[in-house]
Length: 110
Length: 246
Image 1 (cartoon, chains in turn cyan, yellow):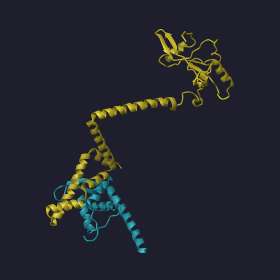
Image 2 (cartoon, each protein chain N blue to C red; image 1 turned 30 degrees about the horizontal axis):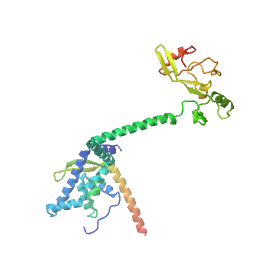
Image 3 (spheres, rainbow over the protein chains, first blue to last red; image 1 turned 45 degrees about the vertical axis):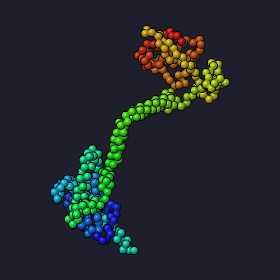
Image 4 (tube, chains in turn orange, brown; image 1 turned 180 degrees about the vertical axis):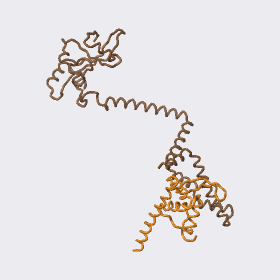
C-alpha cells in the first residue's frame, strides 16, 4: 500500500481486462479487485478508466456482456471473452512480450 | 464490424435502457466497494464515502462510457434537436415568424437561382453557343439601340470578324383560327437567321436566301410541339397559304 501505484501505459488496461476475463465471466468490480490482487496491489484500476474500457471492448466484440445474479445475490453485469477476444488476447500478449523484451534488451545494453 | 453497428444501434434505439443498465452497473460497483470497506471495519457512512471517493466523479465516468459506445455525436445531436423543438414550441409566434421568413428567403433565392441558371449558367440551346454574340448599335441617345436596315447591310458586307450576321425584331402576331384570335410571340428575321443559330426545321424547309426581301412572299416558320401548334397539326400547315395580321 505504501509503494506508489503503477501508471498503466496506454492500451495496457484492455490487455489486462481480456486476460482476467479469459478464465471466468466477471463483473466490473470483480475485475478491478482481481487486477489489484494479482498485481499484489501494484495496479489499482479505478472506475474512471475501467467501465469505458469494458464498454469499448464489448463494442469491438471482444467481450460479451450478460446480466446474472452475483455471489451476493444481486443483479450484476458479467463480462466474458468472445472467440474474437481470445484471438485478440493471444495477439496482444505476443505484442506485449516483444515490446518488453526489446525494452529489456535496450536497458540491458545501456 | 456488424457487431459494432448493432451495438451502436442498440445504444441509440434503446437509449434509456442502456443508460439504466450503466447506472445499475456503476451502482453495483459502488455498493461492492462500500461493502469491502465495511468488512474491514469502517462504519457504514465512512465506507460509502470512501467508496465514492475511490470511484471518482460518477457523471464523468458515465460520460466516458457514453463516449466508448461511439454514439455520443448522434446522442448530443438528438438532444440538441429536442431542445430546439421544445424552445420553438414554447415561443410559437417567434417560431412561426422564423419559419415563414426562412420559407420566403429560400423561395426567393431558389427563384433567382433558377433565373440566373437559365439565363447565365446553362449554355444557349444552339449549335456552337459559345460563338454566338449579340450586337447592338451605340448612339448618343443610348448604349443599346436598334440597327437601321442600311447599317445592317453595311455591317454584313464589310465586317471581317463575325462569321455570319443576321437580325431579328420581336414582333407579336395575331393568329386567327376557328376558335378565335390569339396573340402569339413572334419575330421578323433575316433569311439566314436560323442557319446562323444552327437550327433546322423539323418539318418543311428553312428560309431561302432572298426571302427577306420586301418583294418576296411572306413566309413563316412555326414553333412546333407547343400548346398553340401541336406537332400533329403542323404537318397539315406546310405549304399552305394563311392570312394573319402582322
